[in-house]
Length: 144
Image 1 (cartoon, rainbow, N blue to C red):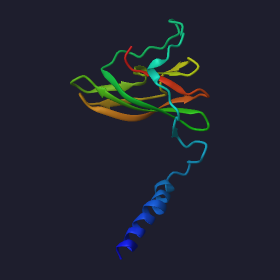
Image 2 (image 1 turned 90 degrees about the horizontal axis):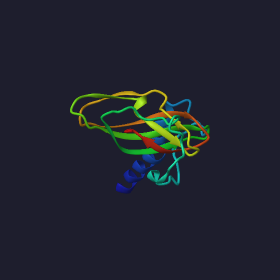
Image 3 (image 1 turned 90 degrees about the vertical axis):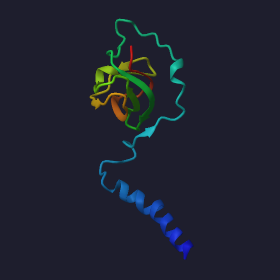
């Protein structure tokens, strides 16, 4: 009896639950499915020769970058799963101008649009979009 129930539970979580989870997402296909980038290198070891006049710099802010993980799909969309901490005691707004990504070819970009309110001392995670590129993101800056 216990094995039948255990088998039913395994069946539900292995086969039924994934089908129900994706049932509401009509635009999901293999090409636009986001995956974490594989074989991601150590990000702080890169040194790109970017002209100082062309270099994008994040606007000063009260956020600390805790973690980031690049994601992409087959059509070249570049996303970052980011976790930041508001180091201020009061609420701050994390905006696109506070974050700069560097791609493997040395090009840089701000996220498309982000404006998130974060309470003082709070950690915050979100996925942010950096547009479409054939090159992966290898660096992320928050503080200049």
